[in-house]
Image (cartoon, rainbow, N blue to C red; front, side, top):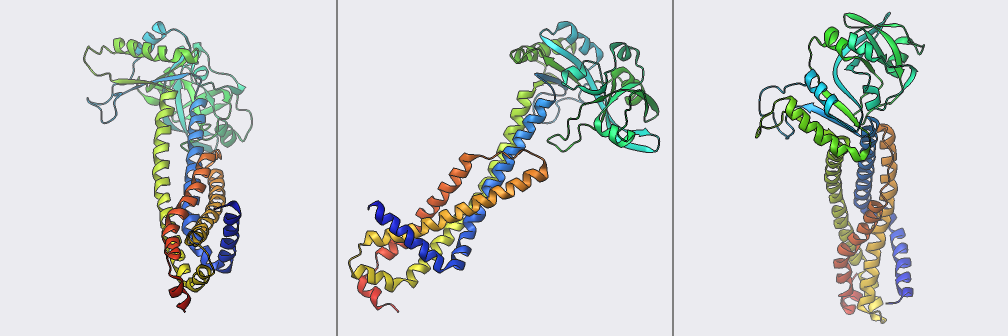
Amino acid sequence: MNDTMVWESVKLAIRTISRNLLRSILTLLGIVIGVAAVIALVTIGNGTQAKVTSDLSSLGTNLVIARPGSPQPGPPSGNEARSFAQRDVDALKQGLKNIRGLSPTSTKSAKAVVGTSSETTTVTGAEPDYFTVQDWGFSEGSSFTDNDARSGISVCAIGQTLKTDLFNGQSPIGEPLRLGNFTCTVTGVLEAKGQSAFGTDQDNTVVMPLRAFQRKLAGNQRIANIAVSAATQADIAGVVDSMTAILHDSRRIGDGQEDDFSVRDMSTLSAMLTSTTTVMTGLLAAVAAVSLVVGGIGIMNIMLVSVTERTREIGIRLAIGALANQVLTQFLVEAVVLCLLGGLLGISLGLSIAFIGTLALSIPFVVAPGIIALSFGFSGLIGLVFGYFPARRAASLDPIDALRHE
């Protein structure tokens, strides 16, 4: 079979499809929807992964976080998870090397009030190193000092959202901000970070000295987590091991006992979240791919109808010397061309849906060329597989019987 014959078969297939345009379009819908769904879901999934990775990297360079609670998945093995204490923080400060900063933190939701304006916000109690650990700079003013943290005075830094909503965009430096039953003085405005991958506004925040937070807002000495920034990426593994060993000693966990805390770096968290997103995207894409098979069944059905309608035409071609393989090739090419057209339309529709979806979700538009090529190739494969039986049936017709067909 030469190239000229294949090209003639393609041209004849296009003419046949155009003669029954409406029927061809309806036949293509299964392929179009299947390809579009796969591409849209994978593209949006890739964008979500990119957003999660970006947000985790924005939390801080070489960040390592220790949290109370069992490091193993599932329910805690003991009673309520034992929170960190100041002795744990002091032990880490004395024992850790190769770090840029360390800060214990705790958070609580509270209502921030300025004049007649109010906003529910997240208040974080931390030490001055918090801003170094989180790689969070200031657009105005500065951080509170170590003296502020030790004395427990009521000062705070706020995010861009609170500056806009409570201070009408005016400079809040030196102004009072009421949080619950006490008032703090604003020392700085943090640089904007925008929304996280989970849809929370990272700029709707207040950061104040941990001691003041514990005494005036939380009412307890609990520390929710301890964040550490390793000096370099190469130091992360060593910092994780050192933190684990130091906390194991400071929390008096005996040999053979399970740790009641976990220490994870951002690469581990990123891998966990990315793995979850990948699995969910894969499952949804697999479900969407079922419609490709359904579309293939539709292709086979319409090709069988086409063979029945064109029985006399097939008989004439066989009678004047056409070979059975030529007839088989013609119908097989028609099925493949039909599926490839559906694949092209599905790719265009899928990318359009993905683009609109990424805009709506505020995530990056990350195209996966491999998935596009795979979807297009799979469309052609569907045409070959489901078009073979009708093509074989056409090629096996008896010329005499075919010519007698009305």
